[in-house]
Length: 623
View 1 (cartoon, rainbow, N blue to C red):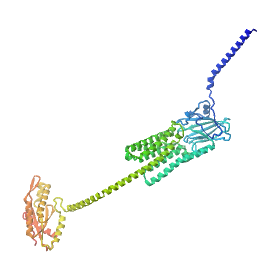
View 2: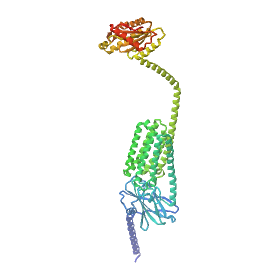
View 3: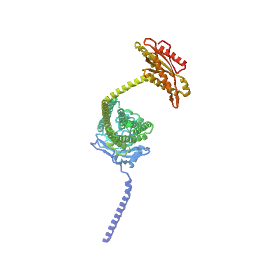
């Protein structure tokens, strides 16, 4: 073979080899998409030596089974098929969701001296948790937890659901957790060694004991104040503090641990019920503290309306599904606190100074409650501040409210002292005036009594003395006449034909005639210090001192002429009057009684009437 043939054959072999390599490269490139479609197996969480606790949120993957119908085998298959995805931003809070959530994580324990681990679901309100552990030999172990499982079934008597994990050293164990709950879907998972879990219990016991110790101390302190002061604000503060303490007692899992460890219904219903009770206490406490019924009646009505709403919601929560009642109650917490802040701002703008500290307290509480509520709905990530926001905000709020109550009481006491001082000063300044007024009033009362006594002795129509007073006064005149040497004359007068005046002109005209007749009789009798009285009807009587019977006759004749002299004018009428008079005089030595003297004078009056009226007649008895 020549040199040219050898060279040609060598180039041909190199071209064939290049073509083969190119075809192989194209085959590999074509196979790459198919190779990339095969999911890589999830990398296990390695429990290295020296580590005693792990947060699983950065490593665990989840799958949302919206119909809650998948079996554990199907979930394992989905995990190996790549359907499980990492937690969004490492946040294990998804809010209120339907269906079931599956969480998958392979774990490889590299600590030969720690085969026992504890898995903790650091959220107390999940209804049902099912843990499946698949070991390398293929067998699967199942454990159930949650507050729909009796509390006694938990591996460790702890407020959060927990499970025992047996993790042999050097083996890869698949952890699969199914969570289904009507509560907020929060699944913060953590692994602990027994020693680390004991330390967790100690720290949790200290922090929660501190919080509930504060609540209990405030309850006892304000209970004593309420028993001493009987101020309604302290009672409503007690209700608010106790009810909200019950809310956190339930949210933190202590209610299920200590109060209803076997009742799934109470585990669900206790959350909305305690929230509604706490909100009722909040509203009533704010209403009393701010004096809304006095200072802002419209706000008071709104506050009572909010109380009625929460009372109705609490009653409805006993039969409404947990997934409906709890979200409504959770959102209502924010609305209730916002309303209290609005009312507090209004009171502050109206100059009510105790509302300042009250506003700060509720602002802190609102911040903590908002953080916790937004965490429950999956809006905020789970961290120390969002997880413990309610405890921190409520503890500060309760302390500040207690201080606000004390400041309010001090303010009321100072106001009462000021009012008492001002009142005392006014009393001191007004004491002399009051005494003077009292003396004036007493004098006026005395004068009024005199006038009243005088009115009781007077005839209301004519103003002359009445018959009762005349009898008393005439009896005294008769008793005092003895030894005086003077006589007493009794004149009994009767207006002539008075009935005819009433019949012809009416009783008002007759009354005018009686008044005018009395006035004219008093004009004449006053000149002799005579006592004039209306004796009844149209009869009058006059008693006076006289020298003798002739003197008495002259006085009687003067009266008769004075009455007859001028007519009585009534409206357009001119009514003429005449009078018949009977007289009886009594000497100073005779012991005649008043009744006897009146009887004799009456006989003389009848003789005057019989003699034609309009005349004077003296009695026939000895004088």
